[in-house]
Image 1 (cartoon, rainbow, N blue to C red):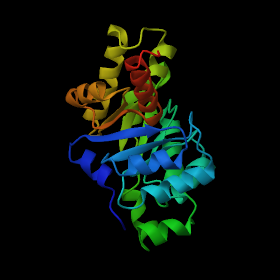
Image 2 (tube, one colour):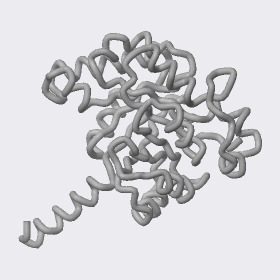
Image 3 (cartoon, helix red, strand yellow):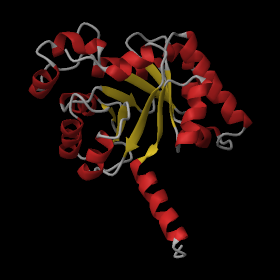
Image 4 (spheres, rainbow, N blue to C red):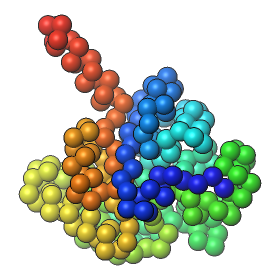
Amino acid sequence: MLKNPTLEKIRNGETAFGLASATGDPILLEVISRAGFDWLWIETQHGYWDYNRMLAACQILGPDGPTPIIRPASNDYARIGLSLDCGGMGLVVPMVNSVEDAEAAVYNSRYAPVGGRSSGGGRTWMVYGDDYAHESNDEILLAVMIETPAALERVNDIAAVKGIDALFIGPWDLAFSMGVESFGEEHEAAIQKILDASTNAGLPCGFPCGDVDAALRRADQGFRLVHCGSELGMVRNGIAAATEALGLA
């Protein structure tokens, strides 16, 4: 089976830098696919990817482009199965608040005997290899999101669940649900607690950043699966800079 370079990179202690894509726009995706990022976050929880566009995204990225890592809208058996059958080589599963939620993510995304994923999706066998069904449990990156006080309280137990490859912090939902200032002292202490739990369990930890400077800081802090913003944010910032320079802002 085709190897997952992003998973290999973070398992080796290196940082894999990605970009989030929310627009569902295939033209922007073609540009991104040639830019050199390690991975692409296909945002189906808050973005504008329907199934056909998600499938097209995996086709555009192809086996030689950035690793397609999909955030499904929920920790749901059918959603996760479709995300993988269309060609996703990784998942970032939202709102994992307990050991039971983490075990469900493993069950939904892994073939037997590790999980209960249904065998199908002929495209993946053709693109990634005829041995996909036997090897993909070791090549599909599974990250679970820690983004609530309930998850924070149980983070060490969640990190110990067999079959998970990484924890991934949802910083804004975490701050909002904690009732604290984003990136204030209490929030940063919670972020560090999650990073420590991940590290102590021998897992890499991920962080979604709003820009490149933040991504570099989090990488220096020890995060290994990091995105540096979204294509929508970059387009918006580029337009704002142009109108400001022209005196039109």
